[in-house]
Image (cartoon, rainbow, N blue to C red):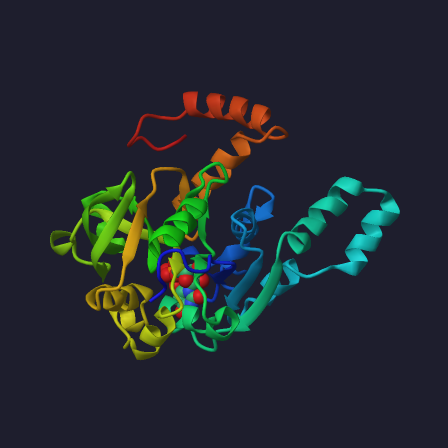
Length: 305
Ligand code: UTP
């Protein structure tokens, strides 16, 4: 296992091969990771987050129906030439953003056999060094520096580091859940057990695993031996549980910032409204409309006229 003070992570893996069934029918042909959050695909925020944290070497694990993702992170010479000809510098810059932000590579996950299986496809790209995993539908607000904090914890303690969010006991059955020891330092906990989507009454805590991980390369050997678990999928949570059972260090960083699951319809709407309302160009008009809209809303339980 990677020891504390060893090489820092340099690479980011973003699994985007899931089916996105919670967002059907929108995601029948359009990958959920490309649904726009205001005017940019959700996935672009995530690549930017990786680049900001110093992880400019990115691998996306894609699947069928995900060709548009490759197109989005590729050049578009005809469009660029058109915008240049029109002298539309702002839109040209917006088009360049997705190609300039990071070096983006792709590998296919032939079959969507689970998040653990998706991460395993990254083994040749990652090699023998720690790396980050950012889920392609999990948006962390750019003002909250979760990934940077996780990278610092990994550099200090070695092993693996996972992001945790207190979702309340009543919601924990939708997530991977963890058992923890006392805080080792403010907001950092030692993980003593992990279980994927436990029944509420059997959950070890209300702390859920959210879509950011910094992993030691030893995870790949464990994933190769991990049998399908919950939902018949090869679960990353199960591989991490094996590492904990073997006595390898796995830490958690408890996040209390802004996070949106853009694969979930309600959370997606919240992300769009929140981010748009905070933008200089759209915010003033949207906020004023929202005030008016909310003041006219019927009381909860009544249906709008
Ligand atoms: P999710 O469970 O949120 O994705 O997986 P999903 O299966 O697409 O979602 P629903 O429930 O059907 O709506 C978390 C992340 O792991 C990726 C997904 O793309 C998402 O970013 N994933 C999941 C893979 O890359 N491969 C898989 O086999 C499963």
